[in-house]
Image 1: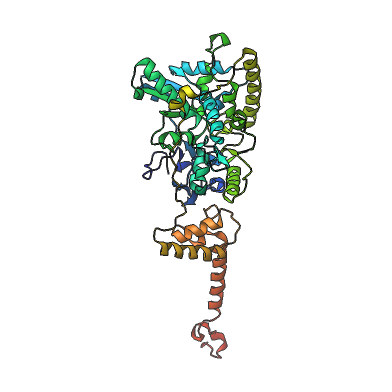
Image 2: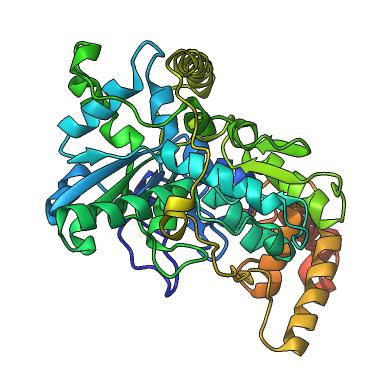
Length: 458
């Protein structure tokens, strides 16, 4: 999968491979949570059906061969009215003494007609979560659906848990639907003439825009990486707070940027907070095994520390987390002093803002063959091959594990000698066979004339 190559039908991915930068190292294949990457011919190859756009390969690639495709500011020219939808994690890229309203004012200077904070959508979703958890007919533990990489991880690797996913739109979708409907009515323009741009910390959000799960079409027009516009935002920051517009969201919605912010906002007692995609996979495996039944809600986030640790952010997640916690503390004090409270109800925007999504279909990535008999034969080949492999999961073969190599061999995309240990054994056996053959030469080829008793004439 290269930067501009056409995709397989039905798939869009923000994560792209720049082949000429790839050195064929195995850093990416060892960290991909769905084993979507292989090294073949000295270059990485991404299996699109398995990729969940979590961005782990972007983090791990030392040669910057993995990149994320997102929109840019030039795309704003296609629309009559443009609205920026900043993720709360954007604020964590600035020191806490930089007010939120100054950051949103800087976005206006970059060409946006309006800024509508995603944190406002988060406040509405918070209330919807509380209402949903009161129901007695739901699968528990409920798994948060705010992180699209986690939703796709469930779809790809844990399809049996799809019914556990919270069937409510993510905060950015809620915010986008509200602002599109309201501005279209107020400004008297066609809804399609309004551009809604999510300022995103991760590639999974971009993929969710182009290929949403649980809905036919996203309410968002596009997504622009935080890292892509951060430099221009710095230049556009107002020199004083007096030049900034007021903020709209409370600390409750902004707190969604960090791990634990969602459950804190929703005030869920029996909850579990898990972040970083491999840790999420471990917890989901426990749920699939029928454990964690005492938990009501799992806040699952693909990035370590939450969205502030997204691969398209610019600040160290440790610094961003410290800044955000300080910012939230200050905002909470300010809100208390001014009597500002988080949204207490959403009846007036319920029809616009909070929809229950349609069922998400599983993605059958492990299907060996459509023919059941061929599939069974391939399973036998896998089991037999796996027994011959060393079980070291070193990745030197270009597959992430010995089990994955056995599957690749059964599928005909790899060979047993791709394993360097099996290759060494075969070379050793071949060398021994050559020695044995050399010792079994026929007498006519092995005779030494000096021992026949004949001498040449002198």
